[in-house]
Image (cartoon, rainbow, N blue to C red):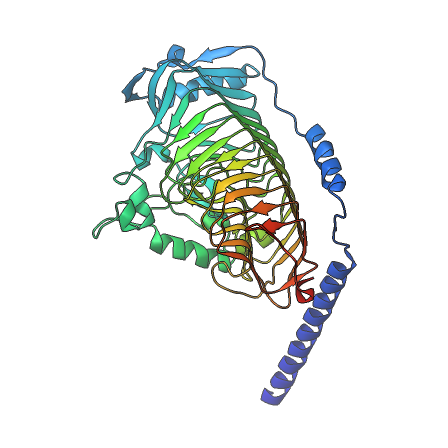
Length: 484
């Protein structure tokens, strides 16, 4: 019996191996059969941008106003108005939609949950001041945290599965975070953490482990005692989203984080927030996104395009696709326009046009960051007309070694940078760190002028690199044949 069992086990193992091998062959064959885009002219991405503009439309709302003071809100900066916001939003939604109006004054509140056809509108002198009491962001909701799904504190402004929602007006959203409230949860002493205080590190490690185990996200329960900071604004699985005009300050973590949304417009928003992980705008696994005429002065990436971390990103399988970023100004930040690092679902068709960047504390202009624990394909990235005063590290950086390695080889291909002008650069003009088996392919820089860099370019594994009329430190770049 023992010999027969071992024989059967060996047979099953061999069959399992054969099935797995054949599956891998079919997958690789499919990938090889898929023809990657290779632009030969800037007319091609320009035509694609024109088509995309026609798809992205702002939601329209009925001309009805629901003023929160009519639902008991008091503008003294001390009274919690969470219930008044809830009642006004509920009434607006049930009536078929309109504006929930925040008049002049300072309104303290806990979590605000938007519903379909509701435009949360802030008057010019209105401030929504968010509570520093973490219990005001309970009960927990289904959310994403650094690209992983879980049950956690509600984002400060949240919507799940809604259509036609907006945050508009010239008022201020104040996350009320500082080194004594929210920021120290990151566990860094420079943000106020000290011995005896709670921090996110153990919970973050646990969430990573649950993600690797493919644990049901709704059974990944965090919240109280885990110190995972909520994001500021997170519409989740929503359609037709508009965020326009508001100023955002003092976020606990990421500022704008639409997740799995379609048809998103972020325009004329001003974000000034220098806390830990205070990214400006992080559209995650979203489709058809316009980020226009915004101002970013942040403690992390200004714009970071994402599609989920590791197992969650691959399981959901929704790429970030069809994004236009134009007319934005970036000051401080780890990167101006960034793709990654939570990018396991891939990214494609990302267009950045006519932006202005200038700060010695801005690390990179265009940054693509991934790793072999992420995997995914990043392709069709087009940047044109960017004007840069200064930056710290690299004008263009592609990095496949961000965080730990794994078994999922990433790919970066078809990246086009045109008409970039840098007055005074940092360490590098172009910096590429890739795998030999997965070189960055079809990277092209055209009509670019970069002054004041220490090293014009440093690259390892590239395929089809082109530099056409690129002048760095006053000299036209001529690449060796080994890099072409």
